[in-house]
Length: 374
Image 1: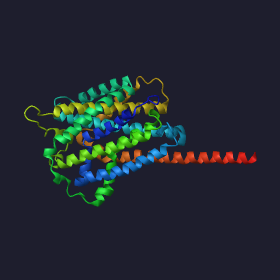
Image 2: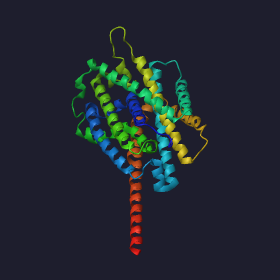
Image 3: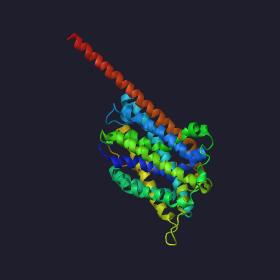
Image 4: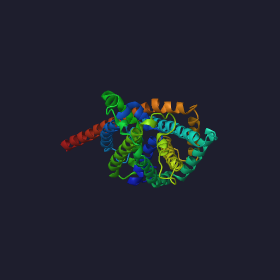
């Protein structure tokens, strides 16, 4: 994948498809459960913090042109640190992609496929993911770029079509459960923007001058999408809070009607969002294989996709039901995101920069001494 070059829109699409899947798979409901009617305000607040964090990441990558977090880990701590970083990211991607797959499959089973065993639904997804990854990452990114506008249009259409059902009382009280929950405890909602993890691996795949633009544009669009989703769900407050299992975005589609001809559009939207979930899983699997190949220097990777698909299958079936899958998402996912994306990776970048500056100072000092001797 280091040899693959992505256009700006391709790279941004990789990040946005993850954010869209987070909105589809009830991350918005998790945020609303935590911060109540202040969730829209909370998203704007943590969005500002996220933008500041992204600026810091951009600054820290400046001294490591065309290197990703694995290369920087190798520079800082050699092969051992590179391997540790790779294993952490692979574990993070595979485990939570599996949990999200289980959540979506359970929703499909509840809505339309109640007669079909969950194992069969999961296998159908995995066959598609395996085939797509056999075609290569470039094909996946191109297809994702083509489908993203359609998926985005469907989401925005659902929000706009439901305007007549909005109840603005869901936005009050403005501070929800209080300033402490909104601005302090609500910082935990940063987990919803875990799509920024892609940025740690993008530098070798994009032009040197494009990384800043991609990082900033994708972050701003991610914040905007989540804000629109949260705002819309708050205004559809009455039924969102009562949904424990079914996707809130799917429930919103059930309220859309345009006369007698355009009714029950939820089936169409669900099919399009299924494509979005498949695209997300293909990207995560491809990125995980890329990391594995990079830390092991494996050359013959033709069978690797089958191994990763098998691992995803096993992990997907570990939760006994959707309640356990939701528990993992809500109570474990956010802490892993904070540790890996906002903690561990940031420290690697900071200490690598310190080492780089120190080595540059030593070189300057040695050149100065040689100049004085001559």
